[in-house]
Image (tube, rainbow, N blue to C red; front, side, top):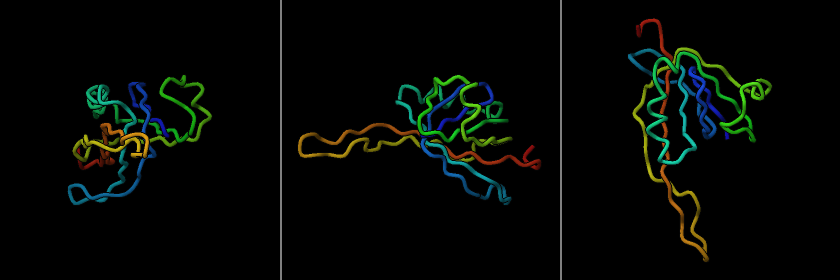
Length: 126
């Protein structure tokens, strides 16, 4: 599990982010795909927080044991990467996923998953 802290200080638990490269407006740019570890009741708050202002700078922490409740001071020593000037480049994906496999004693458990791709903004985007 990883953690994202947006420019406004809000933190969300995410799956391991998937960094890569993509094309947008015929320019190659860095991208990062995020999958949030949140219940469907939090999806609207997450969507409302993923704004250009909150993506001006954000940090992804790569710990295994920290949660969104950790104070920022405790996160200072955790492996992390800072990102600057990113924007929403893909559509939100809200899909049903299997949270727990079916066993002989219990049926499968399903839940909702929210994902989005962010891309680096370039000077030519302004």
